[in-house]
Length: 404
Image 1 (cartoon, rainbow, N blue to C red):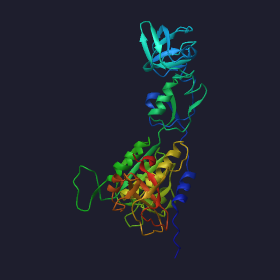
Image 2: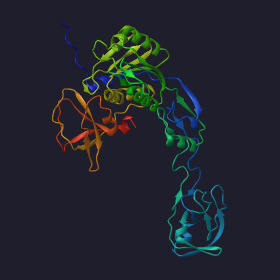
Image 3: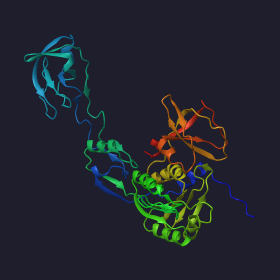
Image 4: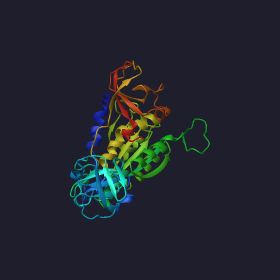
């Protein structure tokens, strides 16, 4: 009898996926306002300084600091400078009324906020001794001309788009969206809105995985529910491989007689790895069908959710040209016991509490999707380890795993 191959560790499986990455090369140029959640194809440089000139952070009076050394100076107001107006040079011994964002007039070197002044007819009493540069935003203090403001591989959020607009970038080059085909195996699967027959379940994974893929900026081809037979699964794989970068399936990757995804991939392409020493999510598969990568996720919803976050998400990011980064994690106090060690790497659903620790969801079953809704992250428990209440544990927030 052929010996059973050892399961890969979590890190070994992730390393394998990352080494297989072929980054998307095609790009397009779009109006900046249409680039939210897209990935930059090249570095973006500023052609100007931001701010483009010295300006005031406050409503108040532009002055020469040397004219206010007494801390109680009475100065005639020589001009009024709103934002968008270029004032005249400030004459010695005078002040200019100035408003937030307006350019500092030549000759002035400080701004006194209006709360530290008293208007007296056509003059103003300065009740403060300002230092040179006080309340002045210097030209280029935010961005200098020629600086890289957004590097290639940046996923563009609201702040990124605002920064691009602030230096006048009307368009941006972005990588094309990843094309991902999905299908779901199981004769027991039923779509919400349809009657639920005895023995059937609603297809929660379809909605969960589509949401995660949309959140990561993918174009999705949804082939729906595929019957539990080998030929139908092979046909679905062939269809999914047409023009897609990645195929993701849910269910059918275990060893049961009705699990047809694994043999179908082996018949239509190549299966490079299968079974990870982790819980939940052991029956994770990775391979290739035609020119498309293939990831087979477990059918249990929590297993599918966790393996997507830990394996599919970093793989997607790498395909999109984003820099590889380990998931952000934090040392947190466990306010629970986990007395039974497992030979697999466990990921349990937890939630931060108001006393600075994390609580675990009572039922850690791989089909208990309420644990992922209740929780706000995972605690990583390496193989062979237990947890005693009060110990520090490695906490991975869903926020930094792309789940919210």
